[in-house]
Image (tube, rainbow, N blue to C red):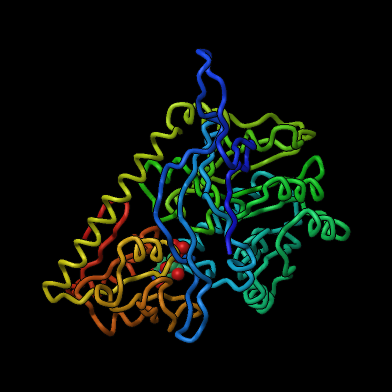
Length: 423
Ligand code: TMP
């Protein structure tokens, strides 16, 4: 189900087996040209492997982060077969107000950067973002996505989509009949193992004025806010601007501009341009590179791992204490992050009765690695548990507003990240 990953996918550093080298004094020493192990979350199930009772589980894999001392990229120590992860996918882009507002902002920011009219979205999910670009005046928007179930959903939503993983070969086939002005990939790039092939795919499609937009979670936000629960098998890389600079060297593409967004706990939109495009890069790129010189290092990752262990211990003890005192505890948001917490804390139905979630694809299945059932979101309102653990903490304001009524009736909402907060 998974292969070991030992070489930095941005700059190429790393050997499978560390080699010995001669030191200046003549004695042997370990070569330091290997990735460093910095965070270990043990063996975990696949975060979106929501299964009904009789369905076979995909399995477990190590969840460990390696750091590249040369280009600052952090990456998982394994790569789970993408066909297992993505051919049938239960993560449907959230139809939440927060997300729809983000889509509208993203579309208008990109529209302001280009007068292009043709868009290709890589990882188009259920088509919601394609529709948002249609609304700001793009004439044609086409999606590519590997999940057959989500392509079907997108087509039902009126979108044109190609049911494929994005590869150089697929890009070549698309380019025969379609030349996008904008290529957009939202929260896809860090899920991809072979970045060289991805960049080669972009090269098949771009001309001098094509705008390439990659929205990715930013490793700086993850480290600063201690968002260890965004480490799961789908997120192969934790991207820094320094590492993307390394990757793009000699590719004919460069970083043109960076825009920050609060979505998913902190993301950046990387705007890439062809080297043939005349305009100078925005100062935002240089600002990030300077900032990362002092903030992005191995120690920051090691500290994240230590804090993660503390936070896991705190939530486990907190929930067990509630149960010991006869309180009823439910979860909200069967996000991939919930799987990380539940397995790290070893929660079962003994601790959490159920997790409520709006996604129908997840409902009436169990949380991966646990027997906790996923139910519809209304269950919380019907059932009125004493405490709700909010695993979708990235939608905090929206959740607090939505459940204001039952909060007034005494239901407490617990946000586990960045540190436990009871509202
Ligand atoms: P995400 O953080 O990976 O986007 O996942 C959030 C999950 O939480 C997703 O499965 C949808 C769910 N959710 C609810 O059930 N109710 C809500 O109000 C919100 C905002 C999200």
